[in-house]
Amino acid sequence: MAKSAKKVVKKASKKAPAKAAKKAAPKKAAPKKKAAKKANVGLLKQVTPSATLAEVVGAKPLPRTEIIKKIWEHIKKNNLQDAKNRRMINADAKLKDLFGGKKQVSMFDLAKLVSNHVK
Image 1 (cartoon, one colour):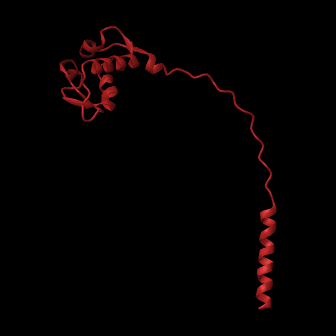
Image 2 (image 1 turned 90 degrees about the vertical axis):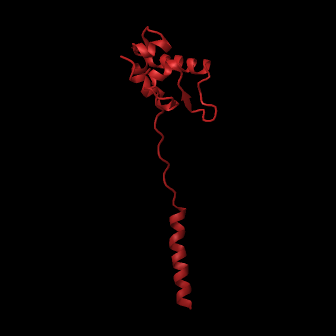
Image 3 (image 1 turned 60 degrees about the horizontal axis):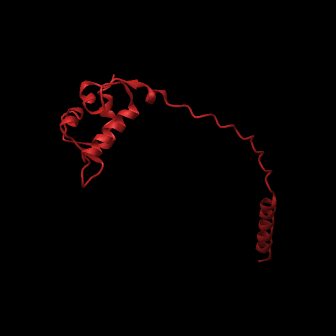
C-alpha cells in the first residue's frame, strides 16, 4: 500500500505545477479604424420598369428599393395581404400580371418577380 500511496502523491505533484504556470497574455492589436459604409450601387441604380410594372409604380426610372416600396404601398392601400397568413400577397388586377398570373405569392418572392420586369 505504501507504494501506491507514493504514486498518487507523485502524480498529484506533477499536475500541480502545470496548473500554476500561467500563459503570457497575448498582445492586443491596435484598434482598426472603421471604414465609411459604402452604398450598394446595384440597389441604388435606377432601372426602367416594364409596362406591367409601370401600372403600379409609374413609368419613370427608379431604384429597386423605391419600386419595392411603391408595390408595398399599393398592397397596403388595397389590403392585399392574406388575413390568415400575412406573408402571402393576394393579387388584384394590376398585380396579377406582375405575379405571372398567380393569384397569390409570398412576400419573399416579390423581389424576384420585380427583377423580371425591370431593364
